[in-house]
Structures are given as C-alpha cells and as structure tokens.
Length: 181
Figure 1 (cartoon, one colour):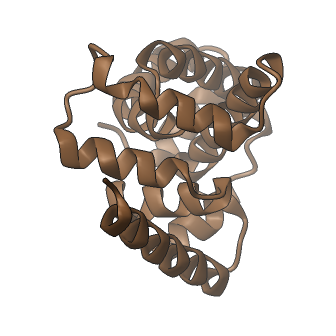
Figure 2: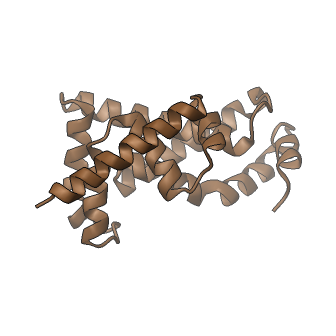
Figure 3: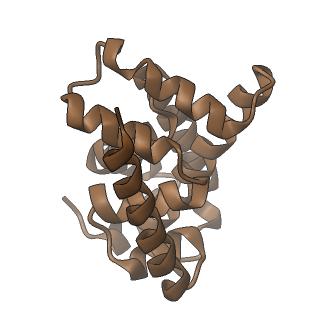
C-alpha cells in the first residue's frame, strides 16, 4: 500500500495513471462499496454506483486540489452518486425518496446478498425512516466508525450540526425499535 501523496502523484501522471488507479480501486473498493450499499440498499445497485464512482474519480483525478484527503474526496463522490441514483429511481417510480427507501428495506429479508439477522433488518428499516442527511451521518458514524471531522469534510457540514443530526437520528432509531411490532 503506497502513501496517499505518492498515489495522487501517480494518478495525476499519464504514464503511471492506470497502474495507480488499479491500486486505488484495490485499496478503496470494499469500503466504498459498503458505504454506497448502506445508501442504495441493493447489491446490484451498489455495484453500479461503485463503478460510476470510480469512473468519475478516474476522469476527475487531475482536478483533485489536495485540499482534503483523497479518501474524503472519493467518499463525497460516492455519496453524491448514490444519492443521485436513489433520487432517480424514486422519481422513475413516481414516489417520494423516503417511500422508495422503505420499499427497498422491505425486500432485504429476501435479498440473497443480505446476511444480517432480524435485529439488523429492523435497524435497516429504522434507518430508512430517517431523513437522508441523518441516514448518511448515522451510517458514517455508527457503521463506518468515522470521526466527525472526516464526516464534516465529506458532507461539507459543521461538526456541531453533525453531532446534532447523529443524536436526533439515534433517538429516532431507538424509538422505532421500541415501537416495532
């Protein structure tokens, strides 16, 4: 695993771009996949969004200004791609995005790629009831164990606002689980 500065340098040089890109994909694909999967729910959709994310990273790496970590920049691209994807799907079905996400979680128990138990399924349903920003903050903090500083960089939101969003999301999830039949 090469350090980030060297990797960026190699990605931004035409002679080493493709080899460096393979290294980048190898290094980050799993973490980005699971981040995207928590947003789009479906395995197939997550793979599609992951591919779109890496295409955007490849095409735009020369515009990367190094004012954030490469990882944060890619997470932001992945987050935006995933949100755009689910917004498009909800629009195609002519339903509100929150209704679309609830539909997706209702099919999780029959999803071959979902390996969670009943508790995890209930948790996913609870998360799906949250507003989009609270979902993102909760997933990044709870599942990805990211620091508020990292989340702030990715979502371009103040740390105080993120802490409030996380706290509110956790309370809503707790309430949902207590009231779940």
